[in-house]
Image (cartoon, rainbow, N blue to C red; front, side, top):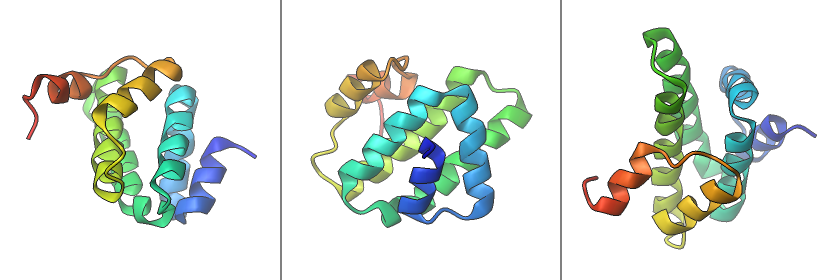
Length: 120
């Protein structure tokens, strides 16, 4: 079963968000696997539906606005990390950053901002 389909079933994403997730997966397959890992970690996958739908919308809008791949990836990672950390206190920036390394995902500017204390 594909990563986007597993995420869709776990979170009950709307079909339009699922389609956007599939597009995201084409560009960022490893990042989609990271999102799946985060969804599983929260133990509340359905609570990730709204943030994932928002993240996928931001990702697609970023394409239209001409944002770079890494900027669009950062939008998604920010939304996923923020939502997951609210649901599961064990979801820390350090853990998330370690998973980024494990999945061979470039450390997004957002994570660097959080580490340096410049994020709200």
